[in-house]
Image (tube, rainbow, N blue to C red; front, side, top):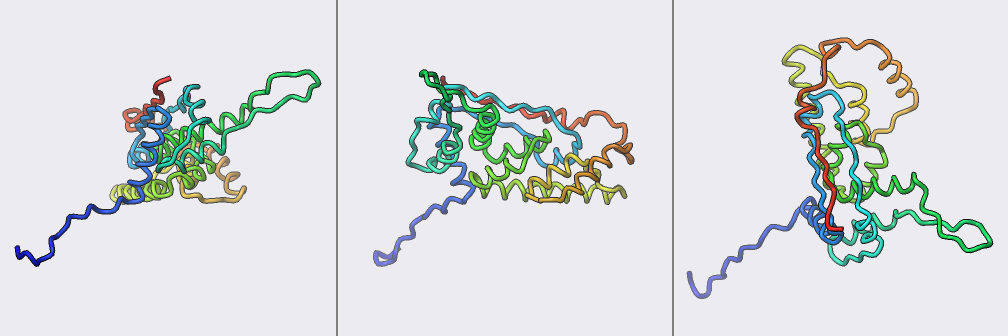
Length: 237
């Protein structure tokens, strides 16, 4: 190469929004000294399984709650930590003349905060766990939109692709796609679809009718059984 020829420098590609979100989540876990592992079914397994799985949100160690209250972050985790800290429920002081201890936060507020901690520390894969169990709510979507917008879009795209695969398989077998009402409702929640009250009234009436088609009378889904998620949350106390 000529001494006057410019040298080619290898420039690494810029990280994607998904990479940046995962980097921030990993830093948050290191900051809180928390281990979170979520194993949830893939979207095709959820769509083809057809029945809700059994899942339970983990317990956040008290030491981690104390770290959240006092933690400070300056890197990528700063935004995620802010989401968790600003929703932390406050104690209240009882109305009394004599001095007394502050009252703990209301149970419903505390439960909502613990759910938010799980979603933010577990990341977008928690969406598949909640949908598969039938537990996804509109509030969960709001949290994910705030914490992991790119990850939420990726999960939505993957769920649509799985639904298309289910439709194609049904067409090949000359059957209607078999998506139970509970799962259809969860997928619409994932897509942030808002529906009128009349829809839910019709849904519950349909649930009261005997099932028709090849899924009627079928047992627990083998796919759902084989892919039951394991959620572990823990870390140094």
